[in-house]
Length: 258
Ligand code: DAK
Image (cartoon, rainbow, N blue to C red; front, top):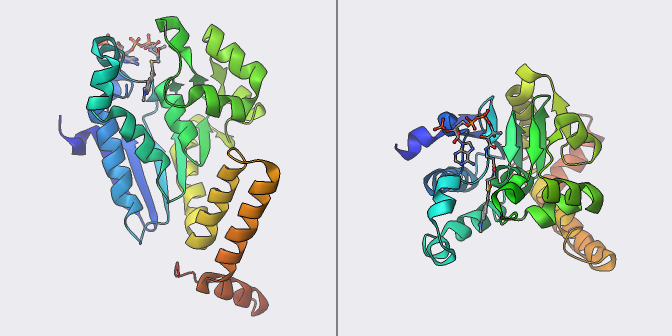
């Protein structure tokens, strides 16, 4: 199967959309699919016309995890030689705001992939979980860290040690997802949210997301200093001049991303 078929890519104005398309295997993240996702995301990330990206799957599954057949056949050496781990790191390093659009199963590596995004919009059908324990392994792409930071120790322990799945409503209640929408609206709403982000100053949005991420990396005093630095950087942009002037002149801002 070619890369074009494994992921469906579209551009809708300033919003890029990448949909994983391996429906028979519930978008199990084979090495090939992961590579195709990274390639598509990096291409959109490099395109200055694109100001936000939606990453989604299908209605039945965002992704049901890493490909278990590949995992069963792999060794740690083979994984690093195949650049599999680097690919996961590449997704984390994207600069364009990334909205995960989740419908159906979002498990294991799929849940880790969604958590790598800046925010998650979920269908009421979504099910989130880190069921690796059922396979005799544990999360390997950030699950123990990002899930714990998102939902807290009690729920993370429960999910990771028992394999329990969270419903979309539970995921919302515990802070894993930003919005839950009706079954038929998952992609439309994710695109709408991405469109809202795309209408803001790209510099402001990027520096804001970057500062929020620091809340999980640094102590408060360091995070606050980081925020102040990003604020000063954003204020130095032409977009900030435009946004502030547009408010005073009672008109909509026109951001250039400079
Ligand atoms: N891998 C491969 N195939 C999968 C799959 C998976 N993760 N999940 C589903 N499939 C396949 C099934 O084998 C089946 O294929 P056929 O038999 O039709 O050929 C097809 O998708 C449909 O699945 P089911 O027949 O099972 O459908 P059901 O509705 O009955 O059940 C299910 C849906 C999602 C509950 C079930 O399929 C399931 O439990 N799937 C496995 C979920 C899971 O355990 N996920 C965690 C995988 S481990 C790392 C990076 C990442 C990872 C580790 C390290 N590094 C960078 C170091 C990640 C690890 C994981 O994600």
